[in-house]
Image (tube, rainbow, N blue to C red):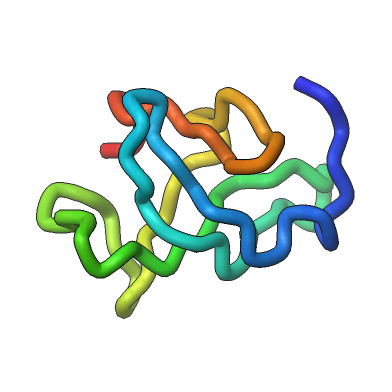
Length: 82
């Protein structure tokens, strides 16, 4: 995967690999010791069913390992989300 600055990720839409819009990136969680991104914090789209996903208040926590590509959208593997 290519490198991306955090400021370029701000407010990007997050989409599953099957084309469903999940929501908008709100923040990221990193391990300050290693600098690795652990989770994406995503504000889910109103039409997206979050009932089977890990939530923190009103946001979804998406493991960074699920990220497949970052371009116009952040594309995540929907099978790794749960």
